[in-house]
Length: 258
Image (cartoon, rainbow, N blue to C red; front, side, top):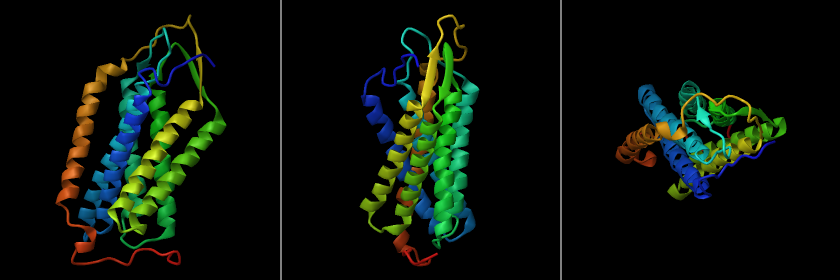
């Protein structure tokens, strides 16, 4: 494998990427909790839509975008295919929505919904990552170590399942914050495991890649990210606390519940 850099702009990108993921995931899981306590289907779907926007759009895709700012092939250009880049963002939001729909469509807890939701949501992290990597264009070829790819899938699924469980198994806000921290670990850990799986072979004789530089669409991405966070934040702040709703759902899960 030829030499590539993952922190060309400095190690601070790892911190920024993780914090972005943790914030987006925490807000997304807060919206998921609101969805589970919603009294009608339309409101529930609305909350799940906001959750997928925060979790899939910011917690997963924007985190990936920030982390990729550090990717470089020294002395050679790196470009991105806009179509695949946009497609990866759409797929992240849609796939997360499907996972949350399975888990959060009912207030009553069920283990099969937790596992299915974790598998789909964790899979969404991987789907976005490798779709986003399809947008990467360099002077050379990119392959992947299948074992590290499999490890990245396991990391994402296990941590996503744990984060979803946190949203219904605990009552304290601090514990709910822990759910977002766990989900942030899942996304960030999966990303860098997936990057470690890359097998890059640079070719000086290859034509320069097509596409655009990452800084060409940096500003619109951050504007969209700010909007994707602002709407759910306002919604969560204005929503009543789940425990204060006039109608309460089934009690929180215990180990013996199915």
